[in-house]
Amino acid sequence: MNSQNLFEALRAAFPEDLDQIAIETTSASGEPLHYSWRDLDRASARMANLLASLQLPAGSRIAVQVEKSVEAVMLYLATLRAGHVFLPLNTAYQSAEIEYFITNAEPAVVVCTPANFGWVSKIAFTSGVGHVYTLGDDRTGSLLERAMHHSDAQQCVARKADDLAAILYTSGTTGRSKGAMLSHGNLLSNAQTLKDYWGWQKDDVLIHALPIFHVHGLFVALHGAMLNGSPMIWFSRFEPGAVIDSMQRATVFMGVPTLYVRMLADARLTREAASHMRLFISGSAPMLVETHGEWQQRTGQVILERYGMSETIMLTSNPYGPDKRHDGQSERKAGTVGFALPGVEVRITNEEGRDLPVGEIGGIQVRGPNVFSGYWRMPEKTAEEFTADGWFKTGDLGRIDERGYVSIVGRSKDLIISGGYNVYPAEVEGFINELPGVAESALVGVPHADFGEVGVAVVVPKPGVELDAQTIIGALKTRLANFKIPKRCLVVSELPRNTMGKVQKNLLREQYREH
Ligand code: MCA
Ligand code: AMP
Image (cartoon, rainbow, N blue to C red; front, side):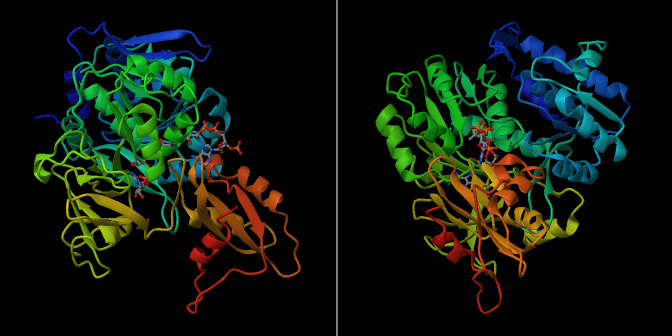
């Protein structure tokens, strides 16, 4: 079989001299650490051999909730090499959330931080998971100890393009999270397209400052650098000053708008500081036109904004250079997410699913080799989100102008994007409504200078009950990831409803904008 394992394509792009630095970072205690391409190759081989020794069926899920570290990247590569499916989980998730992911995905292996081993392993073993390992961000934990006993050479397991490589959970507008199934072919085709479209160059150095449990940090950034054999300057946490200082030794940066806003607030960001950089890319959430403009004024560089989803990886991008498909246009247009990527089709449709003319606002649909095959074990949900002719309904609303630039103007899905993380009001409301004394609630997104948008909870008590907003927030903190916690909670006597009885969130959004 002609294997199309994504790892083989990444490995083939490693530089000839494997002793060159692949990742430069600092240890948890601040010591400089350097990993060569050989280190990545050998350590991921050891971990892949450890996974092979467990004799799991091909395509087993390997669920991973660990702090950002280079060893976590090795584990991702090892999972690909061993022919299994990587399932990354946000480190902020609490036990109720983890329990859902483990019972839904039925992983064969769970890897967690040493600090969380007690509660995570309890959930895992109760759910029938066979193996739980730990991995710390300081090169500690049972995963590395066990992997050390295995060979550092490994024959990559053959995979077909449509075999699964990863599952990324993305919350549903109703009900629980859905696992978007991404194949080796989805990931590789998108990475190759971006390599060409963003003009990756021989001497590029990527600043990697994003979490590695989402599409942005794990796939777009990591695959981008690896497929080009480019080294990375690696930050386990985003610190504006440290990132700005590293720009003199780097050429490419990728971030969500909050990272740009925070760097703009730092006086060290100057034209001089950014002069070595070739490309700043933003995505995951809308970037304000003002932020785009301020960045250009301060650094002389024009941010390239692109648009993606867990289900589709990247689907549109502003051009890096002249785009031949669009009369050589090269403008990186603020407030737009650019053109459909080469090989990816994007269209705007009305509610009946008919194509809309240029400039009109409708639902954004996408088709191409980047689009996932469906939601894990949810055939009905999958069928609902695809049209009969194979287009995926993004749930975003947008328009395409006469020049071909796509703009996102809203969402038909009820979703709040806060600092690049998605918060699904239905999920948070579900938890609030279960609290004693609560009759009903609504979570709405309001503008926020740092996170772009944040959630405000509006809660109605049961008759005769007095609710305290701080108690509600406190109770939520024990159940939900911290970024999902409403930044404000207001107790009111009723929620505004339309004649159909539906809560009018647009009115609440207007009313509580200033909060
Ligand atoms: C942290 N907090 C937040 C968020 N992050 N609140 C709302 N939204 C957030 N995103 C809160 C915490 O709950 C905590 O509150 C306080 O801020 C400090 O937490 P800490 O962890 O120290 O925050 P931080 O380190 O300053 O993190 C902010 C951040 C981070 C660096 C902007 O959120 C981040 O890395 N965002 C990037 C997410 C990302 O990579 N998204 C890509 C998704 P308290 O103290 O009250 O508990 S991929 C995607 O969307 C698609 C496919 C695409 O197109 O890329
Ligand atoms: P996720 O579920 O984390 O994959 O988030 C995907 C969603 O993020 C998309 O459906 C969009 O609503 C949003 N998104 C991603 N990139 C952009 C962008 N550049 N501008 C506006 N929204 C974006």
